[in-house]
Length: 418
Image (cartoon, rainbow, N blue to C red; front, side):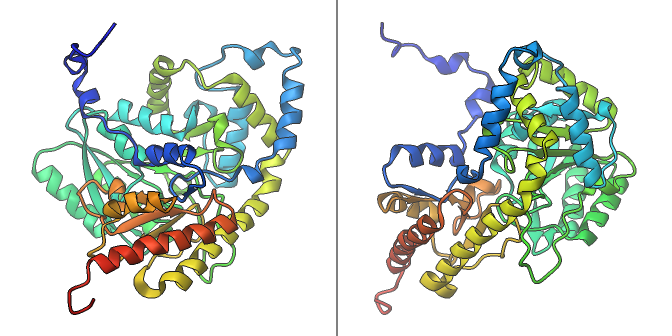
């Protein structure tokens, strides 16, 4: 039976009609489908450093059937021993929290989505760094909220521009709910918010009577070769008023396939997040939570962190060295002191959107900078993830990318230059 005559759009909600796919997810699909594709697109951890043997041993013990809760429904808030483990991790980051304030989520993406549903009505304003994580952009857009971008500087968000944005939106009669930001090795720029600005942001939130959503998936993956101080102290650690909702994850340090993350929120908000999570999935998968808890209890997470930092630091260095060797000063970026990403800027007349089909022909992919902006800018920027490819693939991928960049530059030369 043919469905060609049915106009399905007339059955869709306004939110569904406006929804757009993730550029990062599209590139991830492309990497799988095209043979020999080198992908600098998705921020995936490298499976080479997963604790395969340890996970196999844990799963074997959990699946004996001795503990029926391993495959049973459980509390929406999460497996209690895992929540208690998260409280210990939080304490190591100087964050004081209670069990009633913690919620285990099915990845941090669910946490962001829940925050949008709990805090935002259509037309409300959410403030975002410019550029911002695409998953947050999509989640907040789906609520019908208005997204307002705030510029970044070398040490993170521009607080003066933040003040101007708040004044402008309030003067227009709009309701502002919160600021969303990634202080540690931001996705996509890799920038680290300075300690001085972290303190100023808490003062700002108090004066403006607003909430801060602090997303911290990369804070544990700092690099140790930096000439300047790398301090990843969360804003939440100094949040005396309860204005910060804090999210973190096991995806980048243990494995993303378990989809286990957690969030900390003031108790009145945490209770609403719990209710909304019930309607989404009832609970984060029990087996995943038990595996992650056992990995924490056995010291697997803590013992592997130094190795992970060194591993990703070396990959970053390989990418930087090859970019400098191939493109010199034609490409610039802020050197990431942690995380997975390098935010590369080409000459202003270049279009990374126009380059992408030619890059695919060369079997290398990236995410265009414009995907991370909400104001139509970023056309000459690309996000390069160094976390997944091997060092050899990084070198080869940069060489392929160089051919595309030089072709783009040649296409913009004047007759005299040619």
